[in-house]
Image (cartoon, rainbow, N blue to C red; front, side, top):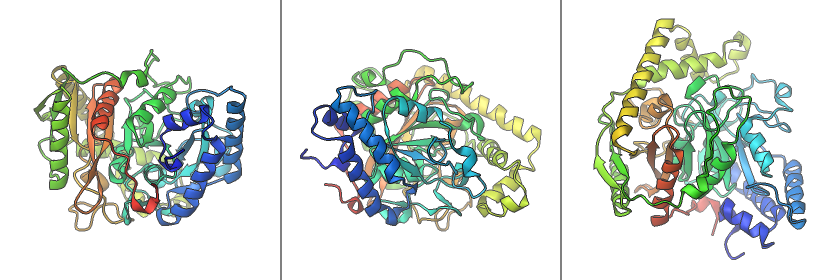
Length: 469
């Protein structure tokens, strides 16, 4: 292979395995070596078990030698965010309060689906405690840094997964998103991240953040995102809230064109201050969508900021994670998490139901908006990555993370699919992101649009730290 193994997509790896140009063991060893070299500066991983990982790679290699490959991802290494149950490894969720023994021997639906398709588990990636914020640091694991500048945050809560993919340590990763936790680190680290429609990817046990929480793929290409969606969306009876399964070929759907699509472009949702470099990059991206045949008009959805409603529901979920923890256990936890838990515990039932009412009104507004427009395009974030180990940038007017993620959490409230794409680097050399939002259950159209854009403006760059050719 002339191309650096660390830069290969999952589709390219599968092809190389089938042609015997590469073996799963060779690829896995290369990635484990990359983790050993690069992770001290990034802290993207909280568990690496070389023996278990290589055993899985050898099993995949034997299947290829027998011409008996298994599923869509046989032999492809995948990073697992440490909120997904894995039978062989503990799932601590970034918290000292979790009993690791009680988490063993269980599989999350996403992990079970990956197993059916022959994946190689690379290890567990870092998360803030219980995935509660838009950056990745915890008392247990410390801070996860950005591969483009280790003095900056990787974002969160799937920051470990994003940093691992961006730095050439994994081609694919699992993430979760209850307020932007796939899309935020994807934008900060310069990768692709998809928050599926709620219920499209089965998730178990149910998240304490309830129906705000989605599980989804984090990759370097939209094609790999679609490939993972093909796997992750398989049925699992344990998720009582999963949508009914229907025939859906996410990979085949990528090939359609954009002619005739009606796309609304909103620079700021009508109320967000956006950095100039990001606004300019988004304007240029929209012109490319026009060149691809889409009809793009500037239009805001017309809703006011749902920050208060989101805060009640999200921080109520954070309090839900701690409802059975006593004072001693709480003393071990992130102090900032304890602050929001304390406030959420004082909310009344009417406060909560008022937030539910606002959520339903927002969902109705967006459903009507998509009667006119097939897609909504926005920046993923209004800023680029800021100093690591901070919840908000220096001199930010608020102390809480959702105030700088105004483009992500509204679509957790509505349950819509939302894809973050790399848009290049700002003048400080930090990645920027473009968000594509679709109707509920129209993930295929969102991915197709992202793929067609990516074909015209491919982004396969790695940060200098990664050392990838």
